Length: 510
Image (cartoon, rainbow, N blue to C red; front, side):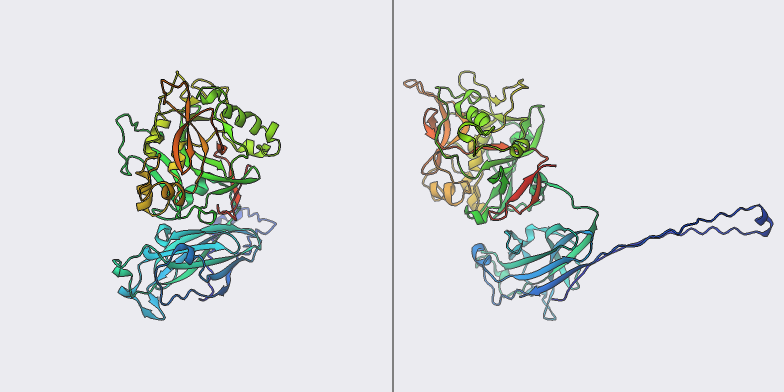
């Protein structure tokens, strides 16, 4: 591959020359000339693509697992900013219609069969179907398609070395005859442009910019009205109800496969999703919802009192007093001052309940936002009209666990068609609850109360995960583990990282 450098500088200089012509008027014209010279000098702008090693050669190629594709020998290359300016770069993969000088024509392998992973050396990267990336204009002769793999910025004199791996998607079957006896040829192109400054990017914008995958690792959008969900008669056609947000999914729940890690409170947390929430002002807005990667060490009762009102519960007080303020038992494990500032305490948490875990994830999502409660308990936290209470740290909803399923579209849809009280069907407990659920979890409390009530017992209940992985209702006086959960301010910034376990997003504020 030849070294490519795409540098476009357009310098427009308009010179207006006014000539005064006419001898008869010369006597009445006074000409004044500027003393100093006007200087316009262009600065250095030079970006190079260098150190290209090991172009990808897979012959013969055949479908392989993503885990195998990640082990392939990569094509490596370095992008270097040679000047004292900031540079924005865009890395594209351009699909060629020629290989070794011969036109491919009908023998060109369609891009939809190709998986790719691009990452900086010694940093994590995300796997995508090539066609899930944005399509951009081609810049190379004989290129018929071009896909944007990554964009970023480089400071003055900075250089970055990347690794690119390509392989055939494991989901190709014998029925995909148009994938057989074909050739896929491509080249990397770099487009570099001058950047006056390196912009500060919010976590919200970072998530929105990621490809939305229909299968495998990545993100998917939950739109209840258009995803085949059977909606009840009480369903509300509002953004908060219709869209359960952008959720993470993965073929494999192991750390290397889910790119939703953030460094928050000087420890790892996970992004549940970019979800619709209601603010105290009554608006429905998007917020990033995060959960602590590791549960708190001890087990706790949902409430010391026999009451499932979250606003008065033991866990609410524990999380928003001692844990939030790093006092008592949490003097060394509670939230630090920077983390406190990142939390959006103007969010209204939903406290709707229902009486059984034998419901679909979408149904649970609906009930969470409903008004079914016991004993006139509040349906929101803070209570409607309460402008003083700051709801800072809570727990996950049952639907958060339900939507954390991944795998292929078929597997994910099958899991979402399973009731949260998991069965031992082919996609039951250990498949949907562990293998295809990046949250996993066993023996944890949720924030949602249950409206279940037994006449022979005066217990009050809340929802919890119990092993084998499934959601059940449990007496609020039982002990379970907890995972602190919070909504982040939309102004939280990402300073570095790509969301992987090894290179999490590093969060900060202005």
